[in-house]
Each structure stands twice: as structure tokens, then as C-alpha cells.
Length: 73
Image (cartoon, rainbow, N blue to C red; front, side, top):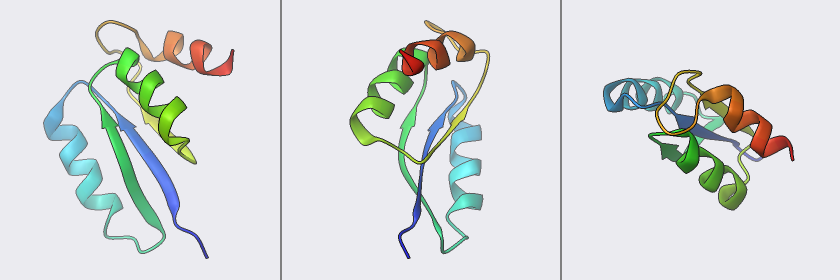
């Protein structure tokens, strides 16, 4: 079975590191990319095509809601 591919998007590096550490203890999960703001999250999501996007709603440059809007276009 293929792993579930995850993109982490949060402007706090320590939170991304912690989430990655927890998620990667699960054999079915793979963190494929990280983003520190909404613009990076959109770029990474379009490029990497993750199965799941774990997204902070309050990020610089582009908040989580607008990030989702752009990805749905």
C-alpha cells in the first residue's frame, strides 16, 4: 500500500518539526514537503500533489482560507 503523502503548512518551524516527528512515527504517513506561508503552501501543493494538506489558518502572506480558495480554483 502506498504511503499517505502529507504537506505541512505553518509559519512556526518548531510546530512543523513536531508534527513531522509525530507523523513520521506512523508507517503509513510520509511528510513530503513543508511550507512557512500560504504562498509556499500553494506552490508546494500544486507541485507535490499531497494526499493531505495540514494547514495553519493564520499565516503570513496568504492565510489558510485564501490558500484553500486558490487551491480549489
